[in-house]
Image 1 (spheres, rainbow, N blue to C red):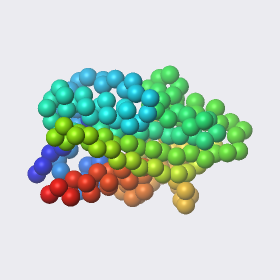
Image 2: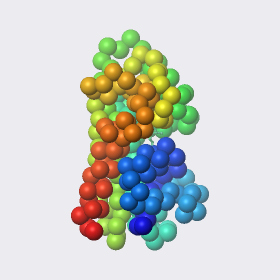
Image 3: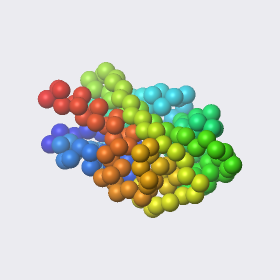
Image 4: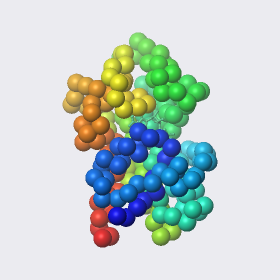
Length: 192
Ligand code: ITT
């Protein structure tokens, strides 16, 4: 089986992506290749940060690799937290960040938001980008215990459940990461 490095430390992302690849590729994450570094994400966009992660692995491990940078953009908060989603409240804790966001949105009528993912693939020294977006709204209170991050407060458009009330398979039918991953998979298949 062909293997691909996914430059992430996030085990939920790895599990989602493994399911999407349906056993067609073996996905190695950062710990699988012995990379302990917390790769700096100092870019000013999802694309820049995704590139920083994939290029770091390609340069230091001489392996083709992909990375995603993703986050939540809330319209009434000027598209915050965006690239700061993982540490919006100042700490890297999903529950704290989610409650911090709800607090900032208190009393706000406009609850529109979107999740965005940009995947950067480095292959043979070339870089390719794939994007996925899903629109939705922010709930008043968190519901559900599946998934990670802001899943308990994000209700995708056209659904009555939050991402955290969905199984991984249901989330993978519609999510931002799944949309971007399907573009990556289609691209990889063209090369077979
Ligand atoms: P890696 O950088 O190691 O891949 P990370 O968790 O730091 O893992 P990001 O830099 O892409 O990932 O930050 C994304 C943050 O955005 C993440 O910590 C969540 O808070 C949020 N997020 C991204 N995708 C999400 C999803 O599918 N569901 C809920 N929250 C998500």
